[in-house]
Image 1: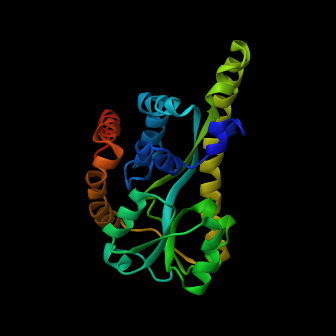
Image 2 (image 1 turned 120 degrees about the horizontal axis):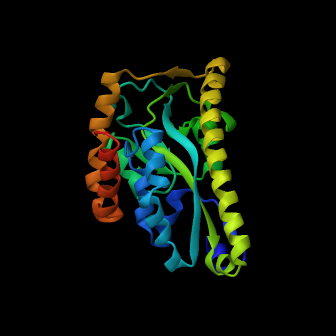
Length: 260
């Protein structure tokens, strides 16, 4: 991120969680549990006014936002079955650095452990952590199914990236070229998001076929209990993220007929 701001590199696609330390905690609304109950609402936000305003807020940091790329919706995994909120109590759960994800895990009674992604497999293997949250492509490609006995398809949170570019570099491009690149980025974003959905669907099937971890689909009642436990994190994070940003997502949800 620093290299991008300095102009040492021109383009990046960091996780949306990375903007908090840059002084832009409003991007952490993407980390809120159950803020996006489905892909339609997510894309209504990322391609609509809320997504645009979030990108506008980057410009004070010398950054221009070009697109939001999905990794997918996250599932929970652990060394024990995860059905009800009580099952999470006391577990050491790996998270990436995020105040929101820390609050999420504490709401479940877990002990959140911030850890580099490259260290997670060994930490699971040795019992340094009991589990984690991850997208299914991450779970598959990193072979976490080899060292985690149970996966719960909670889809409780979203993980994605923001494609960003150095503002000075972007503004310095000829108008025609910039317009062509913006169009190409939109096409690439549409393609990436469809590819992400395809990979998520394929990878859950691969994990099941590997038969190393037990994949569990929570019942409606179990999902409701988990949602009820985690939704208070939205209120808890208002002062950090900004109530106006969270309310803007709620407004989009209401317009789409989504209730929390």
